[in-house]
Image (cartoon, rainbow, N blue to C red; front, side, top):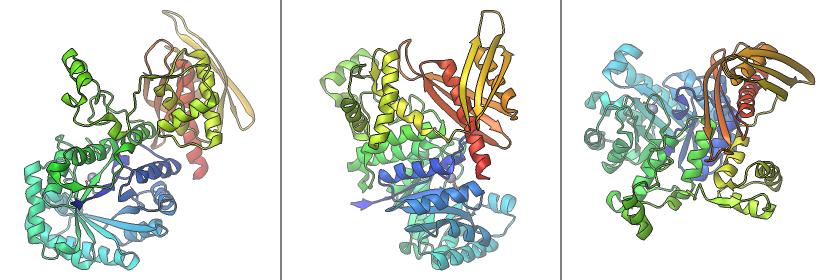
Amino acid sequence: MVTIRIFDTTLRDGEQTPGVNLNVREKVEIAKEIAAIGVDAIEAGFPNSSQGDFSAVLAVARELKGVQVAGLCRAVTGDVQRAWEALRFAEAPLINIVIASSERHMMHKLRMTEHEVVERAVSAIKIAKSYCHDVEFTAEDASRSDKQFLCRLLQKAIAAGATIVNIPDTVGYTTPQEYAALVQYVLNNVSNIEKACLSVHCHNDLGMATANTLSGLTAGARQAEVTVNGLGERAGNASLEEVVMALSTRRNYYNLEHKINTHGIYKLSQLISKYTGMEIAPGKPIVGDNAFRHQSGIHQHGVLTDRETYEIMSAESIGRYQVDSLVLGKLSGRHAFSERLHDLGFHLSPEEVKAAFEQFKVLADRKKDVTVRDIAAILEGRLHDVKPVVELANYQILSANNMNSTATVCLTRGGETLQKAAIAGGPVDAAFKAIDEILGLNLSLESYVIKAVTEGADALGEVTVRVKYGDGVYLGKNVSTDIIKSSIMAYINAINRIYGEMLLN
Ligand code: KIV
Ligand code: ZN
């Protein structure tokens, strides 16, 4: 059976999701988790797009072993050089060069002729080849390009040294049959195609990214470019979990292997959702909350008798656990706690287990039953820890019916204690206003989402905020049984990210 390559672009195309903004440390952590499930390549960013992207690609390239690390660049000398600077310490570097090949893009965006596009592509690939062996060439908007020109361009790219050629459906326009025909056309009409790996990269504007990707693979492409949870520009990219689980679940149909350890999929999906602040829709295939839930009596009965009556894959095969089951109570010991963490796929050092156990004990004092979800929330909450410049010392809220709320907030910053009171329509609003007055930063709240982690009045409340400062949008998160406190802490978490970035620059 043929084994296809999984090229993950969560950190590059996925990070282009509006509202997602990851720092270098987060990108490295995410890259390690993506690598751990067995992807062949990770596209870590677009090094010449910003200093932040450059630093992230550099850090991922330095730290990751056993996986190819890719950086995107335009077919421009400076871009290729910068990509190489960022990738030069990678164990297996891959430079991904992109230039558009459709008439619309060439005419309106690049203002170049076909001849100029070919020249640019060839010259950029040659420069990249002088640095490293593995070079990918991406013909942007390939699915809307003139097929004959596309084949000429790919032929020249391969002759110049490209080892992978990618034919994206950049705008999510194609259909499964049409994309399969394009893949076949390329395989039949690019004379040196056997010297390169043909890659597919599909966007989800018409909800067909997964189907188009699978169709491209069936037609003979050997690499799929995907993102975890389908993150990406506009409606997103083909999702890793959907493509991989389709190949596994319908193995007899597709006859294609991959190297992904599917048991890591659920944890990875949750982790990416937490880091990016992008909630997963309940009905999202494979990883949504409802993907393995059965509502109707007939279905429940069927599943109890034989799971396969209504389940085409098992929750365990993607590492999902019984999220609502009770696990621990107030009197549980550290050993039981640590075992449960292990079952959940968290591999923590003894010090980390100790710190999480202390948080668990505080929670178990307030909450009768602590579930797996609560524990996961405790651990995931810590993902968002950043070195605090500002810390909450105290707060007081006065809130009443038909009256404004008053918040007094006391913060510490570098040994200084700062306090202010503010009035607003609601308690959270008033607290944020008091913080703004203390710090004097010009912030605007882009979004505020509160969600119960589990059921019941004593459930943990998870608050996610997005705060705009200058040109950037910063995510803040916190989890607590007290929703005013988690709101204030999430806001401070976002502010500490802003300070963190200020210190870096
Ligand atoms: O969708 C696309 O065409 C891309 C390229 C820039 C690789 O993401
Ligand atoms: Zn894309």
